[in-house]
Amino acid sequence: MVRTFGPFVPVVLIWWVIAEAEVFPPDLFVGPGTVLAEFRELIAKGILPAYLSDSFTRLWTGVLFGLLIGIPAGFIVAMSRWARRLTWPLLLFFQAIADIAWLPIVIVWFGFSLTAVTFVIVYTIVFPLMISIVSGVEEVPKDLVRAARSLGAGRFRVFTDVIVPGALPAVATGIRTGLGYGWRALIAAEIIVGTSGIGFMMFDARRAGVVTGVFVGMIVLGILWYALDALILAPFERGTIERWGMVRTAEVGR
Amino acid sequence: MSTLEISHLRMEYVDAYTDETVTAVGDVSFTIEEGEFVAVLGPSGCGKTTILNIVAGFQKQTSGSVRVGGKDVTGPSPERGVVFQSFALFPWKTVLGNVVFGLRMRGVPRRDREPIAQRYLELVGLDGFERKFPHELSGGMQQRLGVARVLANEPAVMLMDEPFASVDAQTRRKLQEDLTAIFEANRPTVFFVTHDIEEAVFLADRVVVLSTRPSRVKEVVTVPLERPRHWRDALESSDYRRTVTYITDMLAGDESRAIPADLDTT
Image (cartoon, rainbow over all chains, first blue to last red; front, side, top):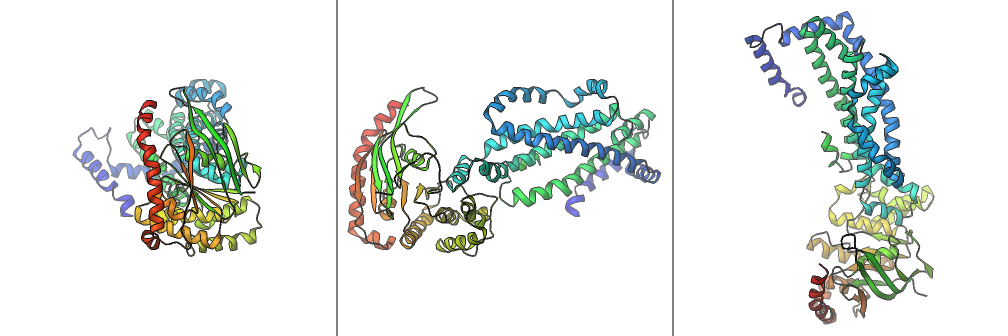
């Protein structure tokens, strides 16, 4: 508890002091008390839960398709020399186009819909994931492959028993970065095309000139990412790559 | 018929930077009999690891032949298990999982795998560590696991590529003793690559001494030491010391000539 919440105590304290001292005009910079009250109200009204579930539905749809496409595509490009030669320049090119830069054309194609948001999330997840898988497969020590071959493993078993687990640290890093990008893309998409969701809530509050709503949104974003890391990503990494003493690559994303 | 027959092995490759053709292995021929421990000894860069890689099937020779049990080597195979300098254990598998891996790959029935693995873990003194992961073991224990993993597959020949080069000197002595004990108990056929003269003499029945690059066999030295062997006895034995000195002199002449040649290539 102390380790989890301890670091936030001084931050909240400084926030509270700044707000109480009215360093900035109170209608532009609200204190923790006001935000907490707004929090309660938004939950009581059912707005926050509804928006949260909307945002989550979009995120999971996007992430699910992103992983379903990104992981196999990453391994195919990593394993096949000609697939790599064919797609690597494309990968770098498309990775360079920022997710939000796709929004204008995506809105034209799909309108203000779940498809549009999903497209952007999938897009942001697939490329970094593929690129980390390719570098992860390259980093699998050559001796491990040789050891497996001279213990009787054929090419398929080398893939399933050596390449896949060997690339797992990179896959974990890729999923972590991919999710991070996807999360940001979701909020950006909701701000621009949104009709609901956390991003929309923040944008809507700004339009109405209520800073408190924006503050609530930002805090929710932070908490959600923290929870995602603590409840899903970190336990997965602890149970696999950390247990195997393969943490080096995974630490990069931390 | 010998277990391993290497005849007129030659290996050339094109250096990626200079575009020159380099001859790593000049003309190497020797044999290893069944149940024999042969050390291949030579100065660093003489191509001894290249020879091992060719025997393992990791690399293809330019010319010459490698036969194991009378058959040409065409690629990696469980009949030629390799113990690596880098250990090359699977970090995501337990100690037991690492040993069982080869048995699984060769299609040994599930219920037979664990007893076989257990027997070899006992042989190398790792019983009781079955559920540990490799990174939880010391360097010496990791390499003993590397040996057990290969022996469990009952290969025609066990290839060892400077297996003790990355452990500290104290542990190395201990591992060398352990390896002779394992060898004496199990009598596998061993192809052992090293640049350490004392290690070669202590472990091997015969030492194949290679010249500098492009390597040729200078001489095959038969080691006149009884088994079982122990470091204490070896160090006090005049046969041991005479053999070490003999090989040292043989390589010393080579090394002084090798220096200008090395400068030429850089």
